[in-house]
Length: 114
Length: 115
Image (cartoon, rainbow over all chains, first blue to last red; front, side):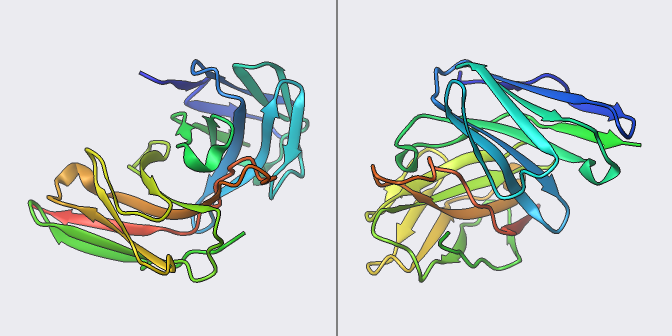
């Protein structure tokens, strides 16, 4: 069974804290993605990575950074958490030439910033 | 990114077929049509995808119009577990693409299944 796992299902952090969200996939996929999901706004892409140490900005990268030191792991970093970053965060992975392949999602991390 | 249009919501009865429509009039020749669904409190789940021909898998069927400007996801016998938000997404598939297959989600169709 293919798997994308995320480090936490629920997380509560204070404003100004540095937050790390971890994602691990066991499918040897080249592409990995971070999305956030908010009511009424749907899923929006924050960052993606197509190879180790490579990254590309998505549609809403402001306030976030990412790290991909190993192929299986893609981390999302909130340098200084703010209340408007309270959201559901979803990680996904897929093979290259991705249009013809499905994208696999993790269960999500619900982050609350107080 | 090419855009899709779906109805906000649809309802069905258990054991009946469900046809979920999607319009994508600006689709390009290399775009794949993907469908995902999201059950409450879970991440999105792949359902099916296709390029030009109709497709079947264990979960659903995908009917693609000849001009590719629209498609329909068909659940042959809806169950209560099929109640979810269904997303129709165009995904760049060409070898020269730069989007690396990122998914651009719209609002999707909320499917309610009645017992």
